[in-house]
Length: 553
Image (cartoon, rainbow, N blue to C red; front, side):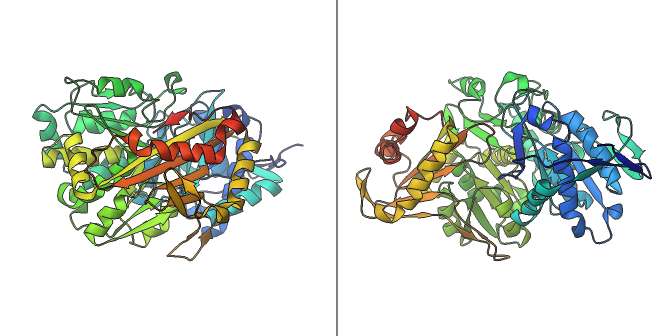
């Protein structure tokens, strides 16, 4: 099939690819899948076709933001999108230098510059490389991930697409700041750090944080050879004066140095090791591939994502200038621990429980119902952007340490004394046979009504259900978001299949037991019977040959 040229625009005939439905955070596949001729183009054209009616006067007056985490195929994808955006008539493109923009930075640029939307090239915390993962998602005018109403239109387009639009043009020099024209479109290569850094300066007291480092406090930040390296180097070492070498693995690499850029206790093992012992730094942190997840560590001390969200919410008004007026509300994803619920009660504000996926927080933030949000997968953020923001969370913790004068462990233990502790773990079972995992969840869902009253983990099942959500702003509903099992002793277990992987199925089991004991219990003792009971309920060893998780966080 020969492309049709008209006025410099090429109309390229194409056919649908199977499996281009966006997941909880865009479309993610193996890199080689994206490298197939027409694969990326089909999805991008489907995005443009789906959102064209949202531009009242057409794309000619609109700005599109484009950038990614620098993983393999990022630069090639950016060049493809530039040509396609020009062919589709966008008035202006803002592209991060080198094709680089962290996910929260894309949101910041969209919001600060009044852009129509943005395309984020990332598979987040998934590995990068030609044999690993790639991804793309569309963010709307508010800076946040497209809601389901939009992603369903995009998916429908991918199933019926017959053509995509592009122009012939040499590659744009992505290293040179400034503007060039591609067809009728202005393409501006921008400093990827500028807008994001300005937003952080508006929220945090950089002078106080400089004083924290000047007084001799030490920190390690592991950028995991991913996108936050330049951001952390500029802000933490440059603006805040932390010593050179504070930022580890600070150069983004296409394969993330061969490592898995997921900031958890397994994949950030080097950082965990360096934060151990009496001579370790005061504070340790890491971010993931695209900069939206975070890991918080003290000396020989790990802060769970649920506790991190709760502590930030507790201290925001007193420690972070951007929140000195207080919080309107907080929100957490359903699997996230209930620690922040108790902080909300103490503050007299509402805590919203949503499905997993940052897009569900967008309406709450836009409507002013929530100020801070978090999810158990190491994602925390606020209304400054419409994405979770790893480096923002790190600066929140730096502010709390600087203002309170306490260590990370002291801050958390003080929180537990005040609010009690949610003993909590997430168990990931990765690479499971997808059909067997789906069959297991279907079987479990069909037996929920029979679970009530059954013994489990030394207690009895009080109730069990599949979580559904009605958005309090627009009334939209979302169903089948994971199974919840509540025990009479106040414990709970949540089970769901993750939508962020690209190979096989990932089962996530979340177990939580609340005790008002100032955090004095051993977590393995507190959770041992509950996790064993859930494994037996699911018959994991029988189904998959093992009941040992791949990762525990």
